[in-house]
Length: 484
Image (spheres, rainbow, N blue to C red):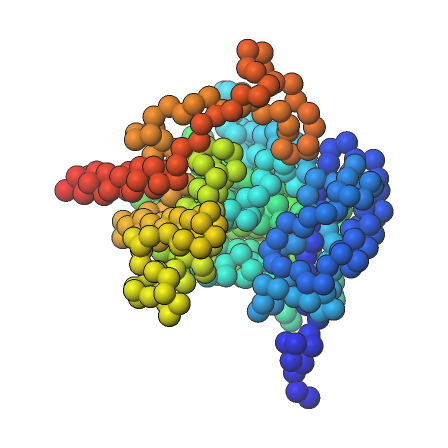
């Protein structure tokens, strides 16, 4: 039987509906209202996009903060006609970002040796809203991880014989520092808590501090691991709670095991890793748990740990295309907040188009397309804004190439606007006080001493581009000094 062509396929599209803190409507009522709103208001859905117009419905206006069309699994097109869409509507209410607790470990000898062994965060968390969208990679890492989780859920629901088809529910992310491995784990946890809310009403992320699993007392370290994972098992016992266990910098454990086997570390280090592997083997039989780990030193990871990972994913430094998107989102955020004057920063596809045609003196219509050419004279203001937007895109591509040449990480890239301001722009005019809470839309009283109509003086985007490029050039000099 021939496969169904893409033009006739029905694609699942995930719609994430964030409910406000003061909402009183039932989630199923909100879900039905969102379904009716989408099916009656749209002919196509663009992915990803924030949907507009729902606030004209009184029920949704009083209960909902945001409606977001996230993505469609394996769909090749960013735009889908509604008749080809299978709406997957996820209604959720994020918890306060400070809603976490710390789990302490100790030797039990009464010597005061207490170390924070792990932190537990309730999901979805308000503090991690937007984290998933902010992470930009060169390949489809995020979709690959999501597809893996969906596969484990399907196999678990079908009661596949674990002795015949086995999976460990473990993911290992490795790569250079600053590439967003830990952030990706947190973002994936947040995403899963939203997508699996119908199945698991509660979700938690437990982040393990690997260094805390070693005790100064001989033979105590293995007991600390067992004590910690007994807490994890207690959480997993509640079948309505989805638990994500994150082991950050796992090489600190596996490197210790390698050293112990070589005779350079005490045998207690070997016990702690063996205990960890034993506890992980117990967790794999639970349907409501996922173990994620990160490492900056792949060569130091023990083969026994690596062998247990279903997915081993390398997270590389961003290429020029990903760097452009990271810097674009930074500039767009500053435009939105009024720090940079109003300008459209083109997306990567548009920027690459500008780059291709900028090498030609004319495009066949008599309109100059040179990078430094004059703005269009027809429809003066619109043409001038478009020309300026093009110049911003070309300049940002140049900066992205410089960043790639230096091997800058995502963490370093997102610091550029702050460093640019601190070093080359100076103090901005005082911005207007925030009169609304952007998260829930509730009114806030302005601080005393500030007029209600105060306005800041945003800086031109060209000034920011100059400053950011100077920071990149300066960092190249400093890195060269550090290396030599």
